[in-house]
Length: 291
Image 1 (cartoon, rainbow, N blue to C red):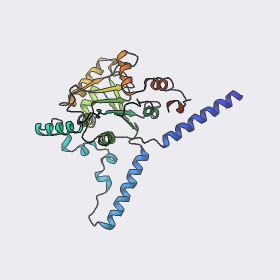
Image 2: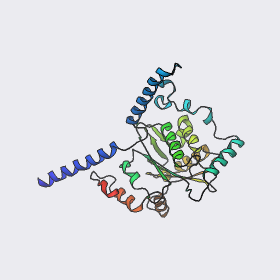
Image 3: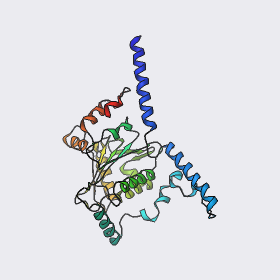
Image 4: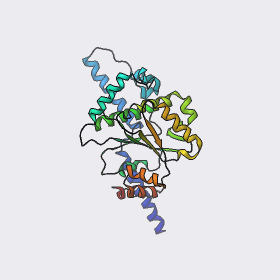
């Protein structure tokens, strides 16, 4: 009886820790964030109406995140990734200037899906000796491709204006031949080819990849083993083609392999990652261990 009560107290304590942690967590695309954003927009619109007689269009007509219409938000800019040669060279030169300086470390973007069990703790297990790792936790249920791309742009600008991604980690659920990026958005070879919003996402993502990296920009996939069947290779080849002319390569090694260990150590404190992994599916999770 005493053991049962103690067990109950431990479970309640763990639940409180997780709830309190989530309260302060900024998750891209969450309903709470959307509500705040909408309230902010309404507030701005209201205050503007007193000082500026210019009519303001309703938010629902032009806010692509609320409408969910990715194509409308893309505009002509994203209809093709093949930039004009002059634009390409100009952007390349701007990036080169942004990367100048001995203190510059190319950014590593880490996209983390909330669908991954205990995803909210992942930002706490990244390498603390590498300031170039930029974690972005997004809401699998409510985020849109627009939300993710906007956050990437914002984080890159905050890191150093004009810089681009050299390495990227996408930490999400999935399996052989597929990636479960967002709710009702499973990336497979066939779906990426047929669904316009999904193909546009990868095209638009390519614009954040480096033009000055002497090696192909690298996108790691974690949380699932995409290469478990031949469709995984087809999917990666399709994504590489969508992201051209940017040079991008995809890797999804098994975590227990030597290549997998190397990938983990690139982004994570290996000791903390192993601790997180062993407790990933446990109801009892001591958050203090990851501080």
